[in-house]
Image 1 (cartoon, rainbow, N blue to C red):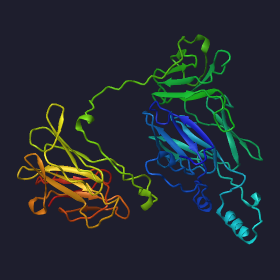
Image 2 (image 1 turned 120 degrees about the vertical axis):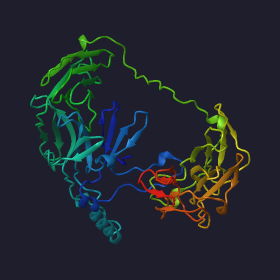
Image 3 (image 1 turned 30 degrees about the vertical axis):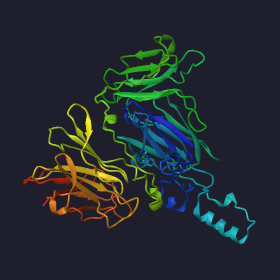
Image 4 (image 1 turned 135 degrees about the horizontal axis):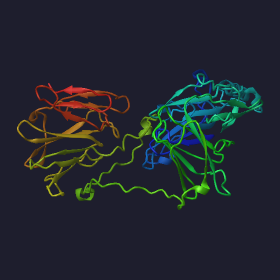
Length: 505
């Protein structure tokens, strides 16, 4: 998350019906400035398993609403992670293509993150312990204002110069208003120690403007949600706000893109009172004022969570399998890991181990736990396999099964080398099934399918093909697929991500 968020704004950026939002910080978009500035953040000691100690980053964060109560942070992916020392982000459809673009005000009187001045002050402090830092020593941070065009699919491109939205005046607040009454929103920003910045929107794309006339005392319709259907995109939705920006508030009017060939253009307003207004046969190029007095009555809208259709019946309890992973501090060995790799859960595979026509389940265990095999009884239940499998020396990772040439099922499970390094230990263990019971497989007893494995831990970002018992690895890889894709029918292994294929010779 952003370390010090000065501003926030919300919009449905991907038109999926859910509000996404951005928080802005102070990461510089100019590479030379970025090299001359220090970060105010300090590394935190992360506690394994605790989410509240997640890192706070000195950069913008863009959160995509997944629609299930969770968000994906896409700042770098979207191209909006940096906009200099930022104050106010505003989502506004500048080019009226149906998708909100992003405008950011920025700048500061003193670049207090300047490495040069900070190091000079440190040297002075070492020579003169009573010396005080002078704020005037820090240079002004007069960065250009930033504009990012929404290209769709949660991707943006920086267009500050192309849109002439690049003044270097230090600006904090930003508000939207239709100065020239042409139906699109213009921009005004206050500037420190200089005249305000006023940007006229010269887009020529078709649009409609909507104002609301609410009942007393909410005469501006604050909190009402406006939807336009049949325009440049199937649905556009905006809300009338009071304030909401950094020290700023905009005109209570909204502008919507119509597109080149609108179809059944309709405006819907859901008032805070619960009433609803619908205006059909909307004509492009007009400004509409919608009066709540003539709205259909209703009760305040309460969002209802739809009941999902159940396609599966939970049977976890019938498996009688409990996975345990003991706490481990991954960051002690590799502090720059973005997340823990030792709590990925067990690998699972399905295979008919007793040749009764029903897929059984094999579940890899954590360190000190055995691989668990449950036999499918064909009636929705599972029973333990006869015989016990030994405990794994480290976390079980990927797991796979196949049938030998003699018809005997076999099982292989990858074993991590992450919690306690032991380079003499094999990176996998294997069993054959004799009359439904597992028996350890020896190298001399096996016919080898081709096997692929990838590493993902310190110094081992690699992949290897191997014959049984001949590799040592610290991999925590999880996903493998075996498939017969070659002409001779031998299995081939593939890994998701960077696709690589290894053929059994």
